[in-house]
Each structure stands twice: as structure tokens, then as C-alpha cells.
Amino acid sequence: MPALSEQVLPSVWTLVYRLLVAHPGTSRDQAIELLTPRGLVSRTGGSSESRHVRPTIASLIDLGIVEDRAGGLTVADDIKSGDDLRREVTSRFLSLPRDEEDPWRLRSETEPEHHAQLAVAWLHLQGVNTPLVGYPAAEEALNRQLGDARKLLRNTAPYNTLERVAGWCGVAASMYGGPGRASALVPDPTEAFRLRLDDLVPAGEEVPARDVVSRLAEIFPWLPHGTVGRSVAQVLREVPDASDERGALSQGASIALMELEVDGSLQLIPGDDASDRVTLTLTGSETRAVARIRRGRVS
Image 1 (tube, rainbow, N blue to C red):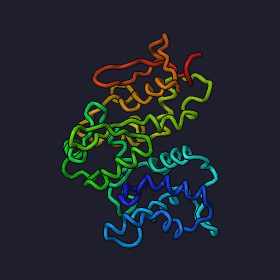
Image 2: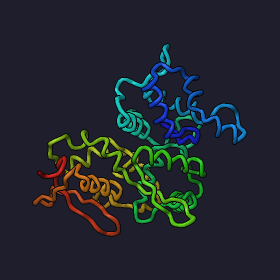
Image 3: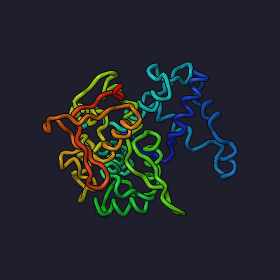
Image 4: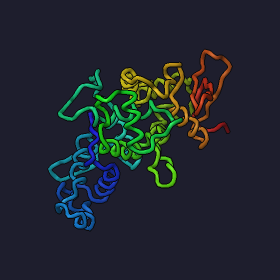
């Protein structure tokens, strides 16, 4: 299970990809040399090597995104674009191994506080009504929901990494927190959904909303109605976004579908039969019923 290592910078994932597209076969040491910000490193008085570049390259190799062959580093054959990079990293970084049943089981010396899938699932269970403004707000919520003995996001390092990873993967968004305050983190998987539209609703097709919701749970197990999301919800003393318990789609997922409708990527159709409908949860107590989802606008 991938860890929320503060040494892995998602922005460097992009830089590594761009370097290897332009110069396939670059050795690992050459890539580290080229991507190390020498001026910044010298100003901080650290070693001559960035503490982020080598671990970030290693994470891409572990995920199968970059291959380290005899001829140097190359991008995997199935990664043809920046969108492919983001889609595949998000899928592999935030998914459990196929044979895994217990997402809380330790897989290494790393405690669950560093597990990315659990942290993203917890974030989505917070909903959007009370955005998390910095680590202090997150810590208060975690202590209240899991107790002082919690093993999830125990300090600022994994939480700050969660913010960076969630933003890069397109599963959360940052909101202005006000003068002198940290930005607020809210669940918003719009961009992650956008990169998987062909899997959710194939081009030119119309699909029952219930099928789309099932596909969302399979593709994004960290959503509240996915396997990891439900595992996290079971151990929380309170679940701010309890939409799944009421048979509705979570706020983050609901808002993402509606944002995709606004930009013309999807059309959400209410339908005539209430038994076919899925309930989308909006902010506050508002809801919206959808029976079918069509790719694109109606011409």
C-alpha cells in the first residue's frame, strides 16, 4: 500500500515524465542530477542532492509508470500523455492490491497514518460542508472521530503530503481559507472522474445511473461507497458525510458529476421511475435524483 511519504513530491512525477519523454534512456543518476534544484539545495545548507527527487523516481518505478532498464529510465508503453500519467498514477497509488481484504493491515514498518488510500477515504467522508483549514482542523476532526489512539495522519508531514497528492491526483480541491489562514481542503474528484469518463460512460452512450455509481466504487475504492471508504467509515465515531448510509452518493462524488454536467461532459437525466434513480447529495440537505447518465450534452 503506497505511503504518504513527505519525500515524494507529486509535482516531480510530472517533471520526471516530461524529462523521460524528451530524453528516454536517461539514467537514474542523470535524472536526479538534472531535476535537483541546486540553488534551493545550496540555500538550505543541505546535501548536494535533493531529498525528494530520488524517492519520487523510485515511487514511479514501484508503480510501474517508469521502467528502469539496462538502457536507462523509460516511461511505460501504456503512458502516452500527461493525462495517462495522472490517470494511472491515481489508479495505482490509491488502490489496494487485488488480493487485499483488510486495508488497515500493516504491510511494512510504516504505520497506517501514512497510507494514502485510507487518508483519501477519510477526507471524502468529511464532506464539503465543513472544509478542513490546515492540519489543526484535521487533527481535531481525527481525534473526535477516531480517538487519541488513532493511527491515521498523526502529524503534519503526512497531512501536508495528503494535500499535495490529493490535489495532483484530482481527488480534492483547495479553497481560499481567508486572510492569514491556510487553504481549506475539500473532497472534489472531478478531475479524477474526467480522466475515467470512458470507463464510466463510453462516448455516445447513455448508462443507468446505478451502473455508473457501481463503476465509481470499483474504479475509486476510496470513495465513501467503495471498499476502502466503507472500511474507514466503520471505525469512525461519526461520519460527517453519511450519504452512503442513506443510500445516496457522497457529496464529493455528487458535486463532481454535476460539475461534469456543467462543462458539457455529461448529462444527468432524472427519468420517470423513482426506483431507477440515484440520489446525489449536495451541500446542506439538498439532493437531486438521477436515473440515467449520458455522455455529453443533448444536441
